[in-house]
Image (cartoon, rainbow, N blue to C red; front, top):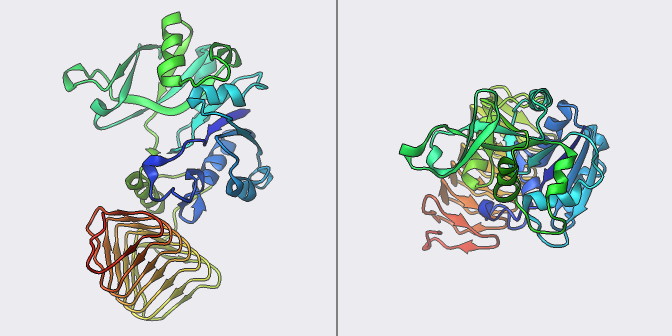
Length: 368
C-alpha cells in the first residue's frame, strides 16, 4: 500500500528549534521524528511512501536514502511553488492507482491505520478522515458525523454553546485515487478549505472514524517537548518501540562518573562525558557528544547533540538544540534554545524564553 507524507511545511511554529533543522529531523529520544512515522506506517503494511517537500532536503535524503533500511521504498517529490496540502498530494500522487493513505508530517500517533483502511473500504467511502478527541473543542475545526460514520458538517472554532462534538481532524486520511481529479493541478489548494467542503457539498461518500489512540501534533516547541516525555515515560506506545526502563539507557563511548545521580528514565547518547556529582532527573534525553560538567543538574529536559553544560548549571523542563554552550551556574527553566546558543556564566533565563540560533546571552540579560 502507498502513502503520501506531507513533510514540506516550513515549521515556523516550531522555531527556534527548526531554524536550522527540518521538522522531519528533530529528534525524539535521539531518533529523527520522521523515522518513527515511517516505522509506524510500515507496521500497517505501507511499503511505498512518497515524501512531499518544497525543496530537496539533503539531510533527509542522506539519512533515509531509498528507505530500504526501514523496510519501505521512499520517493522524494519537490514542489516548485507551494501547493498547500491537497495541491501537494495531487503533485506527488499522480501515479497512484489504488486506495492510499495521506498523513500530515507533524502528527505523532499510534492510531490504527489498518482499522481506518478497513472502515474506509467497508463504507465504500471516497475519502475517510481519522478523528481524535480534544479537551477544548472551541479552538479547533470540528467534524460532525452521523450514526454510520458519514460526515455531516464541519464546524470551525465554535463557541461552547455551539459545540456538538469534541472530535477534530487527526491529519490522517484514506483516499481513492479518483478524488485527485477534483484537485486543480499546479494550484495552491487545501484539503480543509477546498477539497473536503467540496466533497461534502457534492454528496460524495465521505466518512470519518473516531480514535482514542495517542495523538500529538508536534508543531510547537511545547508539544514537541511533551511528545518526548510521553514516549520516554510510556504514555505513547509506538509499534516496534518500547520506553526505556527506569534508570539510564547509555550510548556507546559514554563515560559517567560514579558519583552521578540518575533518577527516573534518562537516555544518554553516544560519546558523552558526565562528570562528578551531576544529577540527571527523568524524563530526560541527552544527545550524542554532550559534556555535562561537575555539579550540573538536568531535570525533565531534552538536549540535542554537542551540548556543553558548565559546572553547577541547571536545566529544567527545557529543550536545548545542537551545539549550545551553557556556562557555569547558568539557569534555564521552561525555555527553548536554538542551535549554538551561548549563555554566559551565571546567566539566568526568564522562564518561557525562546532563544534564536547563534545568540549569546550575558548574565545581565534575561532572554525572551
